[in-house]
Figure: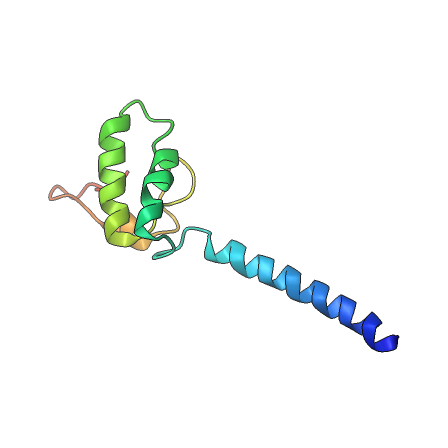
Length: 95
């Protein structure tokens, strides 16, 4: 009986630790997406812009290269590749 009572907390700890790992791996770091996930990630990324069509075009292009789209609808903190890709003029290429 004592063995079973020790197993329950260990199992609970393992489940919580696993959930934390999954959450960190889905946080939007570089290479965290598969190519088939880019469309949905970019759809959310471009959801609040008035320039939706060009936003989706460039977001999908950047996602195909970087396999990452930053979380939220603005800002580029989680994906260095996405953030550092610039146009010839030196402006950010990825929305």
